[in-house]
Image (tube, rainbow, N blue to C red):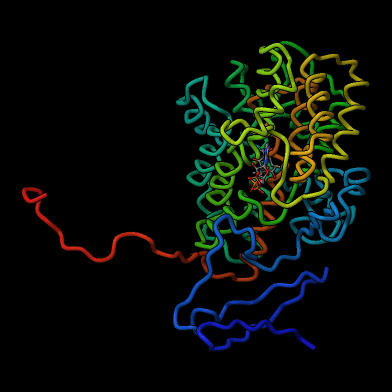
Length: 428
Ligand code: CMC
């Protein structure tokens, strides 16, 4: 029997259906609330208690530390899958057959050129520009060169827009980095796999043959899979809400990149390394920084700790920590900043403040460490996150369009002035 929630306001009762997800999650369906109550709304800043959509893409249970894409556990996908097949799974709902994967790969490769005039736009940015800003702008600029990817309605048109952005996004990300390093722009090599090609586009030198490193490419592949989707987080919700106005995939993604940039979201991986470097410069006294993080009068937070949803452990952090240990060992890397990271997490994991608030190292605590070991510049860390999250954003945008979701438009509780008369400037 279906469950009902009853709400009583001023002695009057209203009933709302309780909907149940496939993992037995319950949600009160308040679609009729305002109509039934004559305009009463809900208030939930930060949406901690608000479900914005029904979705069949990613399931996560923050208490149990479970994360699954389309029903497959993140542990299994990270161990056995590769990024392109996981991208296909997220976007289209099933793991691809060999033929489907081959076609997806081929269609992406067909689109992996970027219009030469885009280089003029890149030229206009100062060399010091943050690559996330550059990536967001270039993704938006792609719209001008691909107008047919905007007004997409059919599944076929959506597919074309999807393979275009899957193809061009790594080129733009690599260009954003090469510009900062004064390296000539590169188009990669379509005989390589998706991740290897990305690495080559980022690091190939004009005067040296590119040498692939399996340890590096495997680690990158895993990192991209771990970041590929995370249900209705800040950037994904942004992509869905922008897309709900039918603005088009590339415009929605450009907004999502901006949302991801912030240090409380994807920007945390860069902030972690910057924090560790600052602690090192300051003498390496981790205990003092733990005290600062606990002090309510000090704005300092331990970056890479805590999560809105995971309150026991972040399953991605577990996988990535193991991978970080392996990669650092295999590459023979010794780095004092990594020792500080170790010391900091050991102390915080025992400290009552962190234990009581269930603050554990999140995925960004370790991803920054691996990116650093792989030779990726700090300011590119959040771009790496965006490269991983791309298929998740696409999948969520596609789902929203196929379900014909209405335009996203939250309500508010107005707390400003009530009506007042305008006074001419001479009377103010
Ligand atoms: N250092 C010190 N105290 C913290 C931290 C931290 N990193 N995170 C949370 N707290 C405290 C916070 O002060 C509050 O204490 P009290 O209850 O005494 O007021 C309590 O823990 C709950 O914090 P909250 O801000 O209400 O929790 P939230 O769910 O709104 O925020 C968060 C989650 C991730 C924004 C936050 O933990 C944070 O700012 N962490 C550091 C930034 C970071 O690593 N972000 C990456 C998130 S994972 C990648 C992603 O998905 O983008």
